Image (cartoon, rainbow, N blue to C red; front, side, top):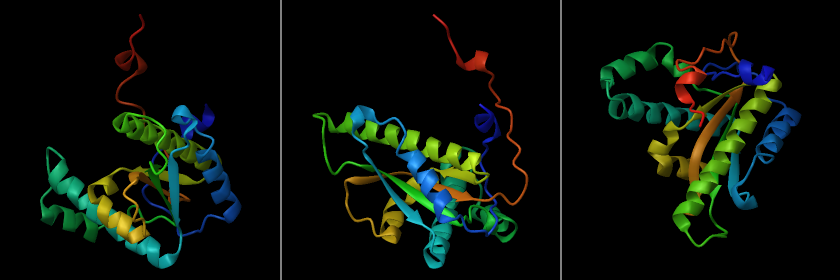
Length: 197
């Protein structure tokens, strides 16, 4: 419960690399997640080399441009987004380690492909949460990025993922936080989101 209460999304990371043993523990935590039907329908692409990280960070910023200027109901102008990037925004989301998580549908085990894909993404979500909790327990910050879904084709090309049966679930940024992590209280209390029957 202490790790659950401490975990919070981190968007500004130190440049300190994550050591191999910590990286391995985080990814082992991922594959210990619940998996629908025992299918283990997940695939992970780890990005830690300098050039690939920088290219992925640029793609994250472009995906955030789509998010802020087109997806939000109160959309930003391009000028506002550029101003944000020119300020502190350019440092946001630049992590020493990224893990791209894909629903792996190369080996089909169900008769309903729609349900199979939903279940694969649910398994990936559980794996992502496990990674983030394991990272928190190691003093490593994390951020779950859904925005790369807006540019999935570009991300797959960047990572050299060509198989159409690998479907992006999310990208997780991992690194040591630049400042103290302070979890925010939830806007909705438990009573507001729960019904007992």
